[in-house]
Length: 121
Image (tube, rainbow, N blue to C red):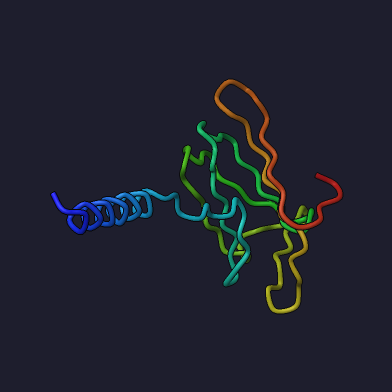
C-alpha cells in the first residue's frame, strides 16, 4: 500500500471519529427555572420524581403541581400564581425577582431550587 493511500485512510478515520464524537455530544442542558413570555417553566433535572411541588414567585405568589416526573417540566402562566389574600400578579407592572421551587422526593428528601434573589424561602 502506498504512502498516499495510508494517509488518505488515516484522514478519513480521523474525520469519521470526529463526526461520531460530534454527533454524540451532550446538548446544552436546559435551565431548571425559566421566566419568559409571561410564564414560569420548572424542569426536574434530577433522577427522581418531585411530589407536592410548590412554586413561589417573588416570595408572595404561590402555585404548584402535584408531581413533576424525572426529566419532566411544568409551565404555568404567571397570572395563575396567587398571594394569600387572593391577589394575582400584574404581569405588566410587576418585575419578577425570584422563583423558589419546594418539593419532596418519594423517599421524603426535600428539594429546593431557586432562581433570582429569594430572601424568605
